[in-house]
Image (cartoon, rainbow, N blue to C red):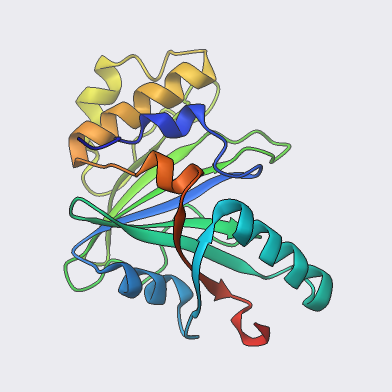
Length: 210
């Protein structure tokens, strides 16, 4: 039995919120390499969330932390996943960079800047083989009710049926939206490992001074 992803709405993955990338058709290490872009990632071995945070804090004191981003990563069911840590807000945007979903990969991004003073909503996006298929704000009330991408009908009926556009409670809209994409795309993330367990870790930005 898998954990699904609705638990994300009720958990503090990091004090900043969360940036989670899930991929089908890509191995975990390949996902990390794609996230790192042109520079090879620096693999850090096994770390708990607390251990990685301490490492990044120490690194920040020694080298400066403005551009340092790390991920803890692994696989579950048929999905690879990477959970961002460090200075990812504003750097790892909702839009998945070119190349992340190439060669037939299905890539899903869950993104929420919880501490952003503008209070943007949590958001979902789905890419496949280099194309943006669909995405939406997981709290639409007073924000955009548009479902974007080339195939918005992948989620439109479920979003409308769940009453997401009119839901004024942010937490409720967030949870219902995660339930929709969990069911539609068979998404899951291992709760215990992400929150309390040990996962492989890597620097994907600011790697050169590790």
